[in-house]
Image 1 (cartoon, rainbow, N blue to C red):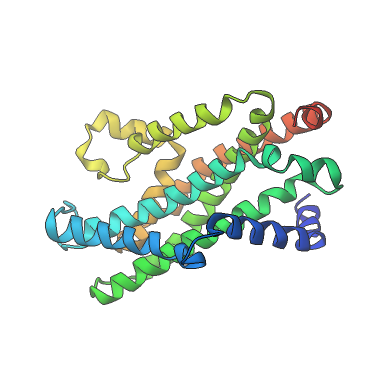
Image 2 (cartoon, rainbow, N blue to C red):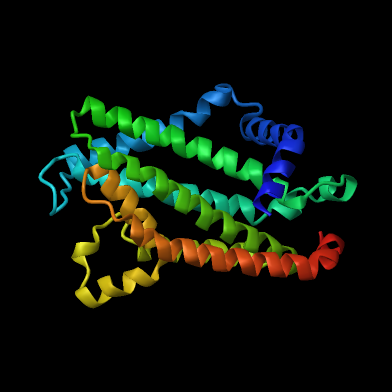
Length: 264
């Protein structure tokens, strides 16, 4: 099954490239700066988080005695969260946004999710690169634990993509799915320790965090950049949850394929 997926990606690489280029151009068509807008938002975000929180607000992490620790903590969480959120947000509309292409051409429909992954991954890697550059400039101690960011990003990709695939199918039949996902995402953001450390929560609430599949992904990413111990085993629940969602999406897609083509 996996080999078939990669074969389809290779076979329809031209289509994937065209969709990626179309997506990037449509975002900045008519703008003066054009593709420069790909870099400006993440640069401004990093500057705000690092300068405002570290210098002006003087926010600190209780575990680390470094003026930039909280900013790195925040940036690490935002990178992974934004990556997963973009996969879900862009993924949920894949079938509806490409309805004309689906009706006119014959190709594996799941190929349409590849451009979503590529664009989201590119944006996240740009942001990560800027954070790493800041860490070097600020002389923030780098550790080998930084390699733990890779499996965290991979788990985030798997989790965000599977939820996006399921949402895209449901969105064809229930158009309220998009709004429900948006509201749920806002609640999940604040229910996950991204802008605040988990240690400020009561112990019974901290225990409940392990039922949140996003929590372990965010925590591994944050610890990896901060040079703290990274527990890759903690990613297993997130991977298992994503696998469950993937199976549910596959069964739903297989069962409703004919109706899905009629509804888009």
